Amino acid sequence: MNEIPVSLEGAGVSVGIVRCRFNEHVGLGMLASCAKRLHELGVADDSITVVTVPGALEAPLALQMLAATGSYDSLIALGAVIRGETYHFEIVSNESSAGISAVALDSGIPIANGILTTENDAQADARIEQKGRDCAEAAIEMVNLGRAIDKRHP
Image (tube, rainbow, N blue to C red; front, side, top):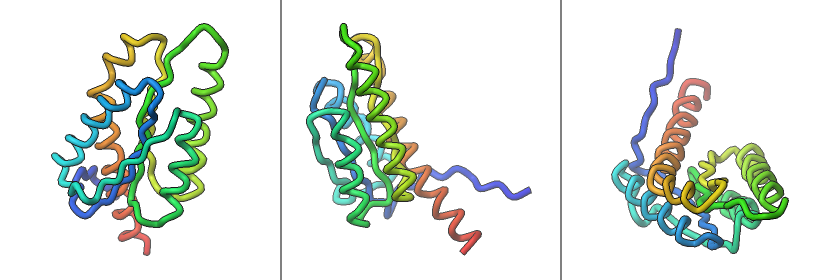
């Protein structure tokens, strides 16, 4: 059996990050955590590009625009959709997630979806640091997985 090992080596990896400004304190906290972990994994500061969008519904289009440049090995979406009193929460959560998945599958570029969907601010706050780190690791791991698969099956 051939097994491709997990690699979190970020040297030489370029990452595009889309940060949603709605629930901004969550997005900013996640960005700080994500950037810190990317640096720990060896991603150079000049290999990270950050763009902001109004909210989660705009994130897929920004990711698609970044993917279309061909300049990024991986992309990350950061933000939060926090339940309110209306059905809007479900629409935003479902559509942003579906859009992000579609961009990843259509472009072939891995996207770490760090747009939290929580019941309240406390749940979002409790997940800021870890989710930012998780997204950094997922982005790098998936780039390395793709490279390893390409080497085995040129």
